Amino acid sequence: MLKAYPELKAIVFDRPQIIEAAKSYWNDKITADILTRIDFQAGDMFESLPAASNNDLFVFSAIFHCLSDEACTSVLNNLKTAIGTHQSYVLFADAVAEETHIDPTIAAFDMQMLIGTMGRERTPSEWKRLLNNAGFEIVAIMNVRTFAKFIIAKLY
Ligand SMILES: C[S@@+](CC[C@H](N)C(=O)[O-])C[C@H]1O[C@@H](n2cnc3c(N)ncnc32)[C@H](O)[C@@H]1O
Image 1 (cartoon, rainbow, N blue to C red):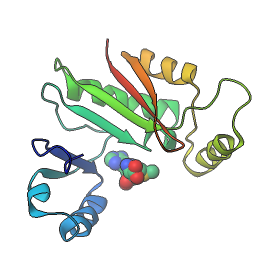
Image 2: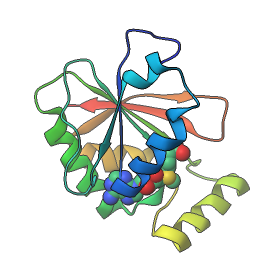
Image 3: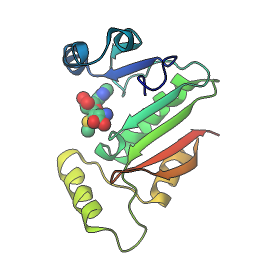
Image 4: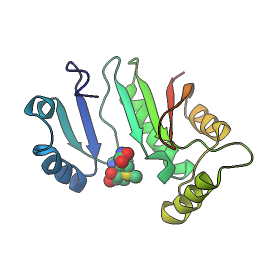
C-alpha cells in the first residue's frame, strides 16, 4: 500500500518484542522513502491503540480470529477510544464462515483457533453481532484473493 500510494503513512502496531524484530526485518527490504513513512509503535492492544486522525484506516489482519468475543470486545472498546470523533474506517482481514454448511477449510481453521488461542472463525451474523454490540456497523464485506475477506466497518 505504501509503495502504491506515495502520500500514505502508516503505523505498524504490535507488542514490543515484535516491533523490534519488525524494524530490523524491514530495514533492508524496503526503500528508505517507504521506511520513513512507517512509524513502528510498540504497545498492547488490550490497553490502548494509536489515536486516529480523520480518514485513517485501522487494519486488523488475522487478529480477531485469534480472539474470543470477550477479547475482541476489549480491543473494540480501545479502538472506539482511539477513533474518538474522527471519521475512520476499520478493515478486518479475516475469514467469514458460511452461516450453514461451513467450508471444511474454514471449519479446520475454526478448530485450530479455538485450540490455540480461544479464537474462532465467525459467520456474517456473528461478525455483525460482535461489531454492533461494540458500537460499529459493517459497511461492506469484500471478497479478496485469499481465504480471508475484508470486513469494512465504522462507528455508528
Ligand atoms: C496472527 S498474527 C497476525 C500478524 C499480521 N497482522 C498478519 O496478518 O500476518 C497476530 C499478531 O497480533 C500480535 N499481538 C498479539 N497480542 C497483542 C497485543 N496484546 N497487542 C498488540 N499486538 C498483539 C502478535 O504479536 C502478532 O503479530
